[in-house]
Image (cartoon, rainbow, N blue to C red; front, side):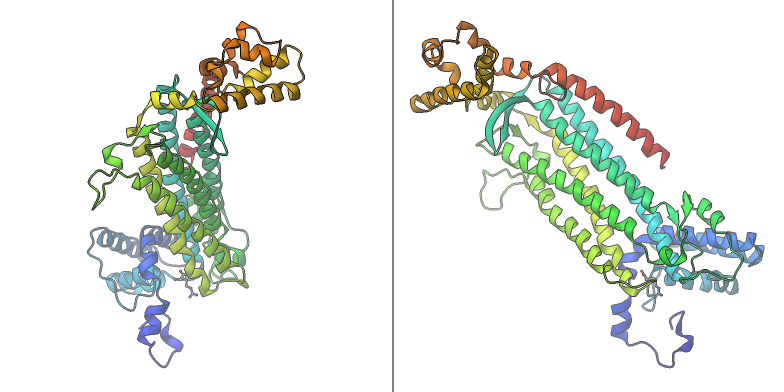
Length: 466
Ligand code: ARG
């Protein structure tokens, strides 16, 4: 018999009962549910709504339920519709009448919203910590490879040489923005709906501010209708997860490319590679591909909840029960991917020689040679055309710009002198880009300092949320 079966004459259809149940998913919220109930019972006693003895019995009973679930000794019942019903049933079986007083002045609607917000906050904290850990690995790898140069690309075509550190830090900045989004999702969840009851508030003299504080919320949700039907905080979490997954997916796409024989820029460790069941020689970047592949599912979680929400009238509707699976999946998936990418990056070998060899291909000095002419008075557009013709000559001869004899340069423009050689080396090209955010070693070092300051500040922000 369900806890709400008083007004029913017939029992539930077995299929319908199972169909309507959310226990398989919301089991994950047992700790939050028990914490919420303990705070609610304590508040009811403080306000004189239930006796201190009842509150004590409830608190001790809930502690036992918690211990049983944690020990794997809790027997869920086929009639347990969700984690809230399961915990309340077990409590009442254990302590009797006091357990039956727990739900005074409360509804599952404000209860589930409270549990879900507590859960979202916890997952955000975990993801914020994971995010910082990956940023630390990117920073370490950048520091360890300050002298490594690779071809920077646009359109996946060689464009200009850049420092590997610079390239890696680009991902660290993406992750720093992901931190902002995850922190915003945390803050969105950080208000307590408890006390909204079913939708309109309650006649009992409850103290919403007290339970909110007791549960570690920064505030109460001001409107009871909104309190029970708002799931924006889950959308924020899923959006934050989606964008972060998209960033990881881009990084993993590069890892897949870079570990291919055509690039050969990196070698993944055996620990983060897999073999083939048929081709004995194979070593595949499966985990990078998996991260890329899982991104689609997390974006699907976000879109799924947006579509679930879009037609809902106020206040609670059972549709809302569909909110948790995607949110849990998004958080689980991002967590796994962040940990996996950390391991992959920490253990990869950087093949600096392959990167450098590729950076010598594709006339990466072309822009700098054009700039050389411009600095000697030729309008940039004309300089561009001169160098374009020189590149065409190279292409026909199958050589690189830096292999062309000085006479060829001088035949193309009388402004060329022997010192043009100085702007042909990839080291010189990198070193010349000293503008803020540019790829010169000193500029990258400055960027690194700036990022380290952001990392330190974000670490403090995470601590403030713990
Ligand atoms: N299992 C439900 C959910 O996750 C709990 C709230 C049920 N409330 C209701 N009025 N049926 O949304």
